[in-house]
Length: 77
Ligand SMILES: [Zn+2]
Image 1 (spheres, rainbow, N blue to C red):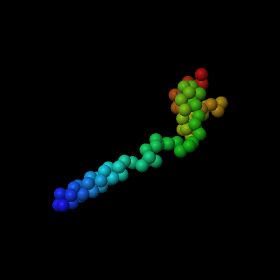
Image 2 (image 1 turned 180 degrees about the vertical axis):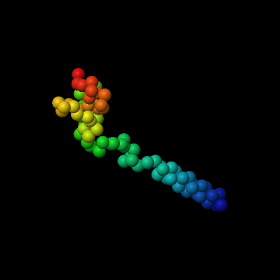
Image 3 (image 1 turned 45 degrees about the horizontal axis):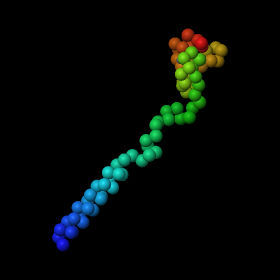
Image 4 (image 1 turned 135 degrees about the vertical axis):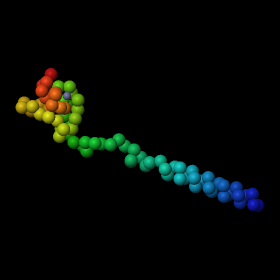
């Protein structure tokens, strides 16, 4: 009888540890990739075509958007 009691205790301990192991996994909603831009509109650089948030883009006097000062200087293709 003592052996059965010990077996029961071992099974409970193993069960609790298994439950804790499962709980240690991050919930699915924290594993999604960071959004970064927060849904800001994206535009393409007129020179190299890379997409970037509109708020980070540089514009030339013709209203075209560029990813950086270098590409604004080089102009659109
Ligand atoms: Zn560019």
